[in-house]
Amino acid sequence: MSNSEVAKCPKDKLPEFAFIGRSNVGKSSLINMLTNHKNLAKTSGRPGKTQLINHFLINTNWYLVDLPGYGYAKVSKKAKQKFQKFITDYFEKRQQLVSAFVLVDIRHKPQPIDLEFMQWLGESGLPFSIIFTKADKLKPKAIETHVEDYKNEMLQFWEDMPNYFVTSSSKHIGRDEVLAYIDDTIEEVENLKA
Ligand code: GDP
Image 1: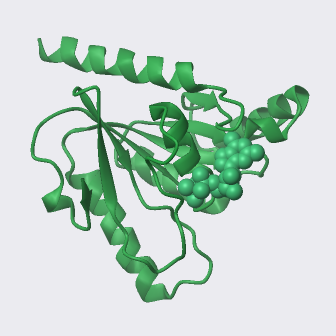
Image 2: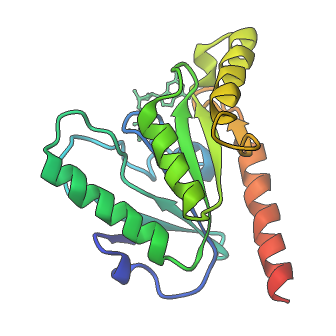
């Protein structure tokens, strides 16, 4: 189901996990890897097109939510504000949201837009994990260094490094770990309800 407004998202109460990150970070590829589909999530395309929240029902027990990519350099201030409202609305209103995954390209140094977004999630009391993408582009030693740099940056603002996953959609790395985490979290939520 695709929606342009939070109010129109699925009404059932299944737990959901949201995926978000800068455009081109590898979100569509990751979603396709996680779900074992070649083309479930479309590659994000050009800026300015209609921004949609996509709900994919997985195994009839949870929703994978594909949120639009942020951080287009070329959009107007007005478009940026509209987009921000759209995203904050989703995070603030969606009771079913269990946790978010913020995707970051493992090759890049921590970027202000990602750090600010995570800061906002934290201040809003919204749980999230980091998913490092495109790990196949670095050698194992460099992966370690980049994750370590990220940790050091995060620890300037946070007491702990958030939960994180190292993934590569082209090499099928990290799939089991992310899915196991989602399964465990759903179970925890259900136990809390029981
Ligand atoms: P989105 O805009 O965040 O949905 O990103 P896409 O999934 O469309 O990927 C953006 C670009 O990065 C495409 O050219 C992909 O082929 C490439 N890409 C995505 N994931 C990986 C990965 O794990 N490894 C490598 N090497 N390239 C990737």
